[in-house]
Image (cartoon, rainbow, N blue to C red; front, side):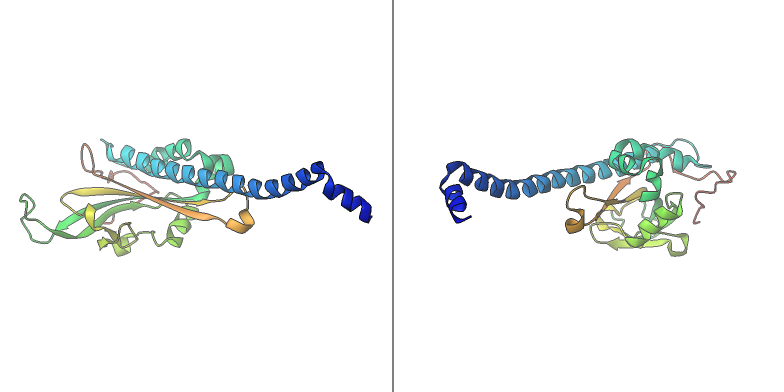
Length: 227
């Protein structure tokens, strides 16, 4: 056995095989990690575009909202966040948290709405739609984002919205549409080591044509007004 080992060690081909094995053992995990990072960043961008697109569509509504309009408009999420559809198929809606909230900013001083000296430190929720299913509500609640009419007054907070706050830089006159999207990213490689990551993206749009109002005559099961 010893002569065989000695001959293998002295053979350039043997050393090359050892070197190749070492290189492969290092490069393969690095390549897999690089691919996973790229996929995660791409998924994060898609999640932001999905939230932004949904908010844009809702903000351009020129008719009163009712029925299943929120669900119909949110169908575009599946065409943008393709990772969710590829992973979960027709059940993709049960694996994301999606919320649309419409708020009105309140001037600190009555009657100052038409002046440049107005300041705003509170916002009132006019209506909120929690994604249309329980899974969405659970995902939003897990991130501290689920809103309700029971807590309809919001105040300035950090750089991202929470259930009770909005970023200070979005406070101003008029109304605002806030969309929250929560998606749990699951890695393809090294899932036991890296684990899943929760992606949260938010978008803010002012109504484009008119107030985004719920039709009072519509018997919608998706959302109810808070005022």
